Structure formats: structure tokens, C-alpha cells
Image 1 (cartoon, one colour):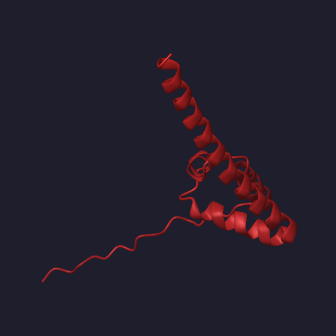
Image 2 (spheres, rainbow, N blue to C red; image 1 turned 120 degrees about the vertical axis):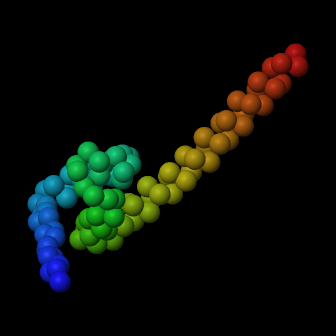
Length: 100
């Protein structure tokens, strides 16, 4: 009978990040870069880590940072609405401009 040789697969060592690295990564995220692009640039496995760091920093910063985050979200929603309105007006201008 043959003996089965079992190899233990060693997991790669878990990376640890400094607080400064985390702050800079979250700053990139808050500056408007997508989580995917930030994760790729920094060599992170996925975007969940970035979102956890962001949440942790918001909790540490207290209610002011949370209210600022909410305000940024409101402004992003309003910006999307204004962009849609602008696009509609551009199309209307093109339509009415052709009929003259």
C-alpha cells in the first residue's frame, strides 16, 4: 500500500499596515478615487479593507466627520440630479434648434 504524503500549505504572512498608510488610503478614497483603483494602486487584496478603515476613521473622528460624510453624500446626489437636468436641457436645445 502506498502512503499518502500530505503537504501543509503555508499561508502567506498577514500584512500589517501603519496608521499613516491607512489614513492616506482613506484620504485617496475620500478625494474621489474609486475604491477599486485605490486598492489596486496600494496592492490591497480587495476594497473591503478600505471601507473598514474608512468606517474606523469616521468613528474615531466623531459626529463632525459623520455629518460631513452625510453632507458629501447629499451634494453628490444633488450633483447627479443637476447633471441629468443639464443633459435634458442640452437635448431640448438641440431639438428646438433643428426646427428653426
